[in-house]
Image 1 (tube, helix red, strand yellow):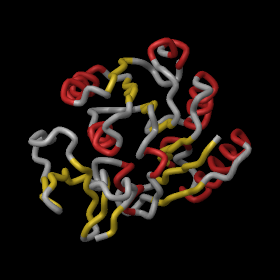
Image 2 (cartoon, rainbow, N blue to C red):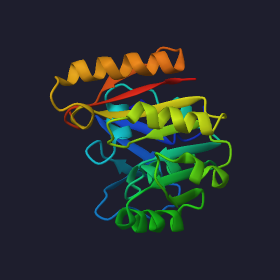
Image 3 (cartoon, one colour):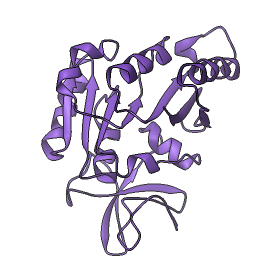
Length: 222
């Protein structure tokens, strides 16, 4: 069993066992529809599928989730139906997760997750316009972005500018959403170069394409 970030002496809130990812269920007995659970060392863990969550794919592809274990507050752009958000609520049960989703149908499902996890704050907003929800978000230290837009870096940097407290980021990049005429590797290189130019710091590229075709996650700090 490979244990990922967790406090020494306490049950880890996220772990990898047998090539699968799990999060310690912060609301024992609750799960997403059809989601497997496992009892590990006497505690209930929810299976975290890399096929429905890009952060799970990131973890199983060697990515480092440590900035998310005690973030205080997270700004999640593109929260969709709340699958990944629910697992982040397990990983950091004391954190506040501001979950931004633009489409109403997934937002209604996201609200159901928020009804179970008190730290999840759902926002029906457009990630391109952080000025519209800035007053509703308090001091996030980590930004997670899963928005399939051509100007993904621009959206991320606009949010980083609106929330000066952000110190770490996880940016999902879908090659075909940015440039469908170029090879994915060329797209990733251009996005990474721009991101490093914008932040002034190195960005780590983690290939998650074995779970999500033509996807990588770029992660780093400000």
